[in-house]
Structure formats: C-alpha cells, structure tokens
Amino acid sequence: MSEQVSTQDKAVREEAALLPPVDVIEDAGGITLYADLPGVSKEALQIHVEGETLTLEGPLTLSAPAGMEATHVEVDVPRYRRVFTLSKELDSAEMSASFQHGVLTLRIPKAAHAQPRKIAIEVV
Image (cartoon, rainbow, N blue to C red; front, side, top):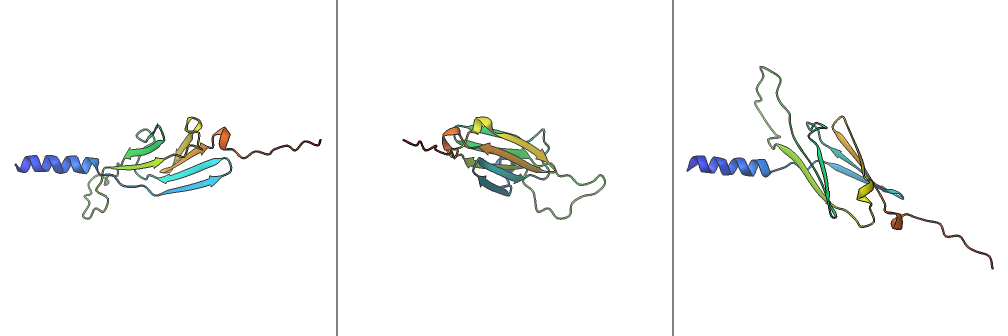
C-alpha cells in the first residue's frame, strides 16, 4: 500500500505547477505579456492557444552543481503553468513570442475590428 500512496503522491506532484509571475501591458494595438520562467529552456517552453484559452507551461530544470547536494529546497515543483482567457478583441492568430534570459515576451495584437480608427468627416 505504501507504494501505491507514493505513486499517487508522485502523480499529484507532477500535476502541481508553479504560477510564474506575469506582467500584462495593454496599449492601443494589443497586449504584451511578460512571464518570468527561470529554469525553463526555450525548447521545452510550450505556448498553446485553444479557443479563447492561452496556456503557458514548461518544465523547471534547476539542478545543483556536480558534487553538491541541496540542504534546503523551496522550489520542489517540476513545472510552471499559467492559463489565461483571451478577450475576443485579441487576434491570437497573429501572436508572436520571444524568450530571452528566462523571460517570455508574448505580443498579442488586437483584432482589426477592435483597433482604434479615425472616422473621416465629409463636408456636404
């Protein structure tokens, strides 16, 4: 029975995820999202859009240097995961992303119908 409990504990631990800190900045053209994901490699980072749901996730791979062992661990969760609901005003098909120094920068422009526009006034 103890083996079954440890298997359940392992499954729960693998489903657990850290919420990465995220800043979202909106301007007239759309939003820019900055997510701090230290310990995630660019190759392992996953960005999914399904319907109106945006999901960011990636495995956390922080290891101690060779010959050293951690005596205290505060981050014992194997991955980051964050889920957002996107506004219908955003055009997820035109999304762009870059990842540098553990920071994901995600740009999501507003859809054409949501862009600010100027209306010309005709003289009659």
